[in-house]
Image (cartoon, rainbow, N blue to C red):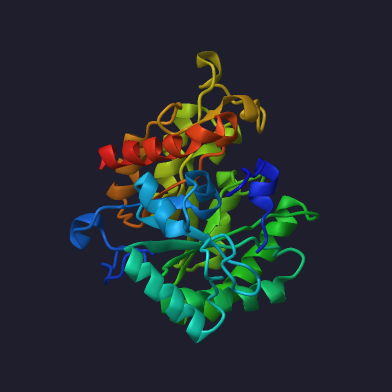
Length: 324
């Protein structure tokens, strides 16, 4: 990436869980780490890999010590942020899927999730069609999770809850045969509110609909630090994918209910330097049966000199590796 994205741009780009049978008490497609006998996959957002200044995305992952990547998926099923000097990756055709699968195998890397930027409120029918195509492509590539946006732009929260529940119920019915899970990212003013998420999951009623847990976004929303772990634990059985980032607030602000987004640009930081205890986060997730990725999404990189950013990411990956 030649230049880092601002938070607005980062959120606004428009374009797996490990295989194995799950016990009856688990979400489909989620094997307990102990049963799978595999570590959690250390991963990174594709939009951050440019800081590594490597010839391709696979080399970039290797240079920071990551095995997996969350890949942005466009409306045409292209993967425009997976950079390669000779290829433009796409999951729109069998040939494109085979080419990507071959390169993943050769590089010894994996896509832990697709990342979609949805507008369910504005175009529900299109979103169902797009997500269905994405789920089929994910199934073919062994990508077991898709990060989705569930964000209102005009409707009130109660109105949007009705629309989102009805639309997502149709989506899950359409995609259930693929076995691919959809993880709503908690971000913005709606899905960072547990009182919105809980009834949404209950009303849709699908065990393949869950959360892309963004650890920093719940903190950004204003939840006190100690409450974060309660929220993580409450939704841990529904986590399919992660965005790991942190914030280092002044000590007198950590346990307060702060205004949404309070001083985020000033205090966001790498995960090894912030207030969130990721050893505790990992334990909460693994105790709940989670076994996909620990995916770094560091939005503080722009505050570091360009020559230092890859080292910052590598240090975050090493920090997570030490926790495992």
